Length: 408
Image (cartoon, rainbow, N blue to C red; front, side, top):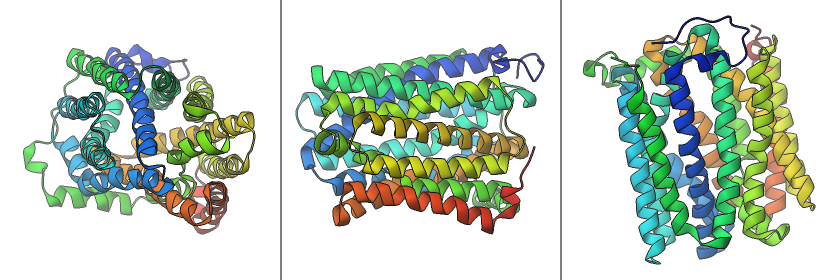
């Protein structure tokens, strides 16, 4: 159960919950390892293929299992003990890294193997993410939730700074195999944290695991405009501006900074996100939250467009940092609104549908970016995607006035 109530204006008030502290610490270590793994996987695929289309296809193999299994994952998160479900999914993700390590050390890594293991990781994520997102509000009081989500976003972004930077250095030093081993070990931190928690979520029981339960979650979202409109703007923005899998080409061919520079490019966006998250975790969210979401999406798109045409490494890092900060402001406000207005018995299903949007947008966007890059070039692909994202924010502001007027 959540810890003792605290004044809502207190700084870092969510950290007074022991179980939330455990989850936060475990996830920080585990996510750092996962981000190291991400750099290694993308770099290996790039070396094996040298193709922007092949890099973009990675997004397809990640998102297909998420779309296929997300609703089932949300139903299970509401029906079962969310903590126990996460134990199984984290173990499954660790096994994926075990397989990547074996392939790397035996020099048997192929694009097909990378795609297959990415598919399996996506399937595990389809069950892990709803359980994790629905678990957080159970560990803190309602008034502590904005602070908890800000802190969670901040430490997650810290992991995405440290992970790529360490991963890029290790790639240049000893290769990908050791990175995959480190990722396997990092999953132990979150597993230990989950085992140490006092919280137990009984859930609605196995009888809830059926198609009717999944449809109930969809109906709730359909009749709640604030939820589906924020999901829609999130998907559209990340679909058009999703281009992170093209970073190896920027590092190698366009900016000429190699694997160490690649690690810094991957870290720049989360660095900006950490700064924004730190501010949000110590200050109240803006009152006009709908406008803040739309402005954040517009700034995100504009910064990605500038990154696409930048020929200076420092400017590229800066623009990625700005995009990360803008995305974090939008993310925290969206998550707080959704988790606050969603009943606990539906949080898993709401989170599963949201996962399709917030993960589907970037992953399918990588495919789109890869195809467009093949047709008109890498820089044009990224820059045009950022401009379309900017236009999307303006269009949503006109078509969904309820979102633009949303205040708290």
